[in-house]
Image 1 (cartoon, helix red, strand yellow):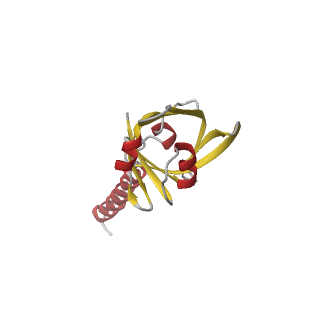
Image 2: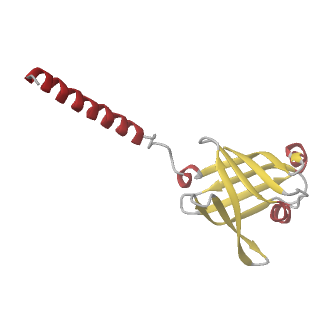
Image 3: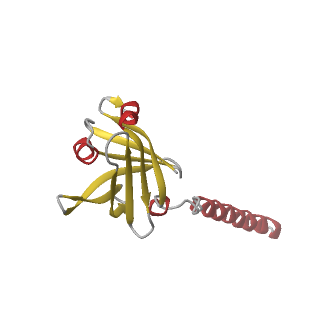
Length: 158
């Protein structure tokens, strides 16, 4: 082998190593700027859609509710304000817990004076849309509705 061939082989090998290293670094940079769910949930959210086992229930919901707004604070507390078309408005507040690993958002709600954890599934659709999934029996109890099966509440950032 001549020195030129040896250097070309060495350069080619090092070139391949550098290209692979650059590709590896690029693959590791998966947009580390994307906020975690615990950061995303902080703020105010307004209910924009409701569906259950029967399909879209948003029009029915809008007949009974002027608005539903949820605020999640960084200190782990929430406030839910339900503005009813008729009757007294409803306000719930208390601690919440978000488990990214389990995909659950758990609100602590007082039922009969006893704090009760109420778990919901959650999915973020970008930074400004939050879908919350829960059992209709719990939501019917809290909101006095007649939803059926699994309920999906769609909230938009206020």
